Length: 612
Ligand SMILES: Nc1nc2c(ncn2[C@@H]2O[C@H](COP(=O)(O)OP(=O)(O)OP(=O)(O)O)[C@@H](O)[C@H]2O)c(=O)[nH]1
Ligand SMILES: [Mg+2]
Image (cartoon, rainbow, N blue to C red; front, top):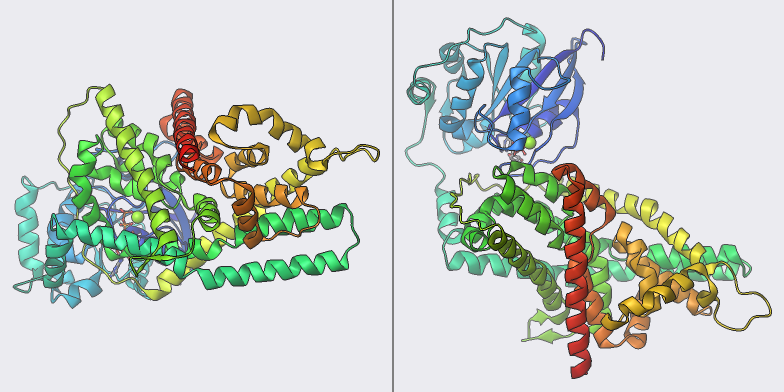
């Protein structure tokens, strides 16, 4: 870092727009969402002011006060006090507050002012305040506080210009006089009276919406309808795009077959890459539909309401409403979900949440689920309205959730925890998601998925193709080439262990690479079947036909259930190791998930077989 760089940190209460401001200043794309506790790590970025002066910016987790209560708040406390290991004290602390919530947020400003360091107050969300008819006198606030006060609108293009100008003009600036009022509460009231005038009634729309959203009966009905619609949409909206992708993959495959002479290269391209990757790519539209809903919900402000509604249910199971957001993030991927548990204060609650997070259905399972549902569940409408496939998918997600609650309940019994808890959860204002932000967010998800496809999934598919093709059958031998290959031998060796749950050796081959990334299980099945059936150039839609004809219903159901609990992918294990700092925890999690998966698949396989 160059010597002239000025170091600033953004801090303040949760959900006041620090990360939005950080992204605006530095051009980064860190996650922004409308609930408390989104940022749990310290993030760094840079920008250059018009004068040419360079700034290094830290985005910090939100904190309710500088007395840290949870692991993420510790970071904020230590950075602002200048005690963070390996981090020199900041040149300026930028204290961000939400203009519509000053009563709460000014308290934090007073705490920071008491540190006596150079600081600026950024009053963010000026637009939202104006819409509600709140009038702010920032000059007056500045005079009363004795530190510079700047208005910002982090979601607007030029919304941080005034802040940059202020930083540029006065930096590093003098330390403020460290004043701590005798009574924060009185002091905040004085500041508010001096600088703000509220309309007589605010947030009427929020109140009306909450009358339904938080209603003990209608609220739960609304939540179920919403969840249900999402799964319906995953199946129905994505179908045309899926057909298009599989059409393209099929023509490519035909073209390669017609153009290249028979040989390893053609086999690698058709059976390995096109069959494997093509199959996984077909699920991109479904993943995007799912994420469109997740992103819109995150921005709407509804999620903490859902947490509030489900708090009692979660409490009965031993979790608290605080675990809701981490568990919800796990629907995208368990990794951010497990990281989000840093906002949970109680270490035992946090550990329980980490243990059950992998039971939430992450988006990597979607291909496995929809492949099997497509193969075994007819495309029909029930009750004149419900898409049966969507219904089953909903059921699988529900099974994951209920299992998580059950496991948490057992953990709670086990540790004899009868602790009471109070859910202190901030309900943010409702907000309409910006289409542009949604599109950017979706683009980002598509990018992540495609990088996975082009990276780990491609690598494993090629590896699997190699293991399934070599050693090749000696010319004088009779028999199946796949049987003879490395992968075939491994599959056959594993088969006895998995026979009781209905997995034949083809499936066993696909299970191993599926540990690294679950989607690879589907790609591997495609490759294995393409190779075992030399004459067909398999594409995704055909994989589901093969599965439908070659597997029994019991096997299909067993594999579906396996993936509800399925041993989590290796990156999840790495995150559990990092977040709990314990190998023991990794072994416990792996062991119980394997056990649960095997047990559940066994029960399902054996019962469906009886019934078939
Ligand atoms: N209308 C409006 N919304 C804003 C503004 N700044 C941020 N937001 C929204 O406020 C919400 C919270 O923004 P974040 O940047 O995630 O807040 P944060 O302070 O980083 O939150 P934590 O990381 O949880 O502490 C998001 O829904 C943003 O889109 C603003 O100036 N105006
Ligand atoms: Mg943030």
